[in-house]
Image 1 (cartoon, rainbow, N blue to C red):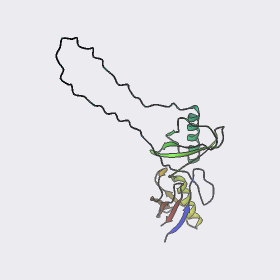
Image 2 (cartoon, one colour; image 1 turned 45 degrees about the vertical axis):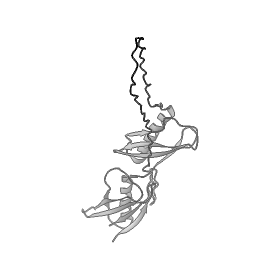
Image 3 (cartoon, rainbow, N blue to C red; image 1 turned 90 degrees about the vertical axis):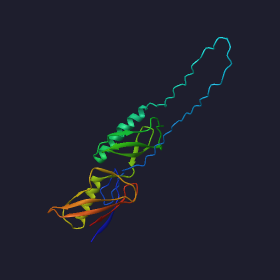
Image 4 (cartoon, one colour; image 1 turned 120 degrees about the vertical axis):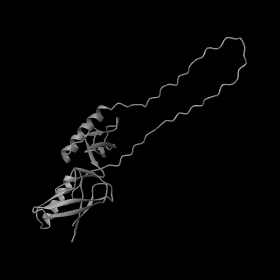
Length: 211
């Protein structure tokens, strides 16, 4: 007999049965590659005369280097604050965070930063809320598994079940809508159950079926 419930997760969650978490991201990286082709002309027969040979001049093609834009102080400050905010909310440190090198500090400006944690890469969507640098953030397609485990445990208790330990394997999981996976559920006496998780949307909504 299985029981189904719906769970929403966000990095900034409330204490209700519906939790909201912002985990995950879709990162599109566009790489521009310049291809240069050269044409080699075969030498043509020349008439032999006694005139001096012209001076040969070597033409060296200029070196083309990709432009590198230095990060602004605003970007560096945002990366530091964003990393701190993510860690405080999820209890998981970021290994790196990379935001646009330059951006306009104005209310309503939105962009993505690329973050890495626990060997997984995801995007964090940022929206500036005023010219003073305050911002809101969320992730997409990223599940914070500790929050999911806590919800499974509380859900079983709310249904009159015993205290259990849930283990979803790891700390975070990058998942897309439609993905499924299992979490192990173990009772105090060692009884084993499983929770089938199905990801509903990129904001962290999932369906949970206890088996």
